[in-house]
Amino acid sequence: MMEKVDFGKAQVFSPTPVVLVGCAHRKLGRNVLTIAWTGVDCSDPPVVHVSIRPSRHSHRMIKESGCFTVNIPTRDILRQVDLCGVVSGRDGDKFVRSGLTPLNAEIVEAPLVAECPVNLECRLLQIVQLGVHDMFIGEIVARHADAEVVSNGRVNFGALPLVVYTNGEYWSLGERLEAHGFSSKR
Ligand SMILES: Cc1cc2nc3c(=O)[nH]c(=O)nc-3n(C[C@H](O)[C@H](O)[C@H](O)COP(=O)(O)O)c2cc1C
Image (cartoon, rainbow, N blue to C red):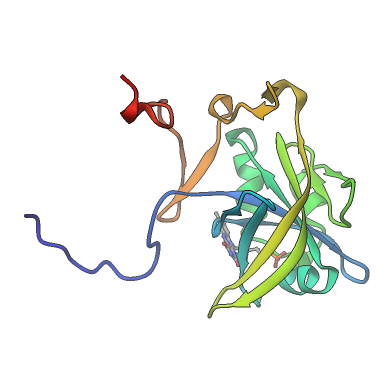
């Protein structure tokens, strides 16, 4: 057996998605930030989370507005994705700086990112204080996708040039391997 060693706590599993989170606040305006600590938590009701440090400008915005959007980018806008994760909305409107286009959401008061093919509107359910990150758990109250990426009522994620995050780097995905349940089919 191979020896197992401790590897610290920088990135404990990999890859994670990279998403753009949109938010807005009646006094602070609109904002967008890049998040890699995120995931799906429940199918019904549909629930996702994003983990945000209290030092982020967006932290207060989402806490006080009670909503956010999760926007799934592709590699076509990687430069903008990175930019939204290294500059703060405190220093100016990141939509203007990045050239990303804000779209009005249908239900929540937070911007969607037009350049992202998939957009989720979330109502904040709970904030769980965990340590350096607070986990913002949100129920998806509306979903949007570019018509060209939807077939048979599903987003064809496999056809999208998605970006994942691992050890401080952006990677693309490899090839399709198999389908769910293939191991039990003859
Ligand atoms: C790829 C990437 C992933 C990031 N993931 C997170 C994250 O999961 N949680 C977080 O609090 N900050 C994360 N950040 C940092 C924030 O996006 C960054 O501090 C941003 O400037 C905060 O913007 P704001 O101050 O306008 O809210 C990430 C940055 C990058 C580039």
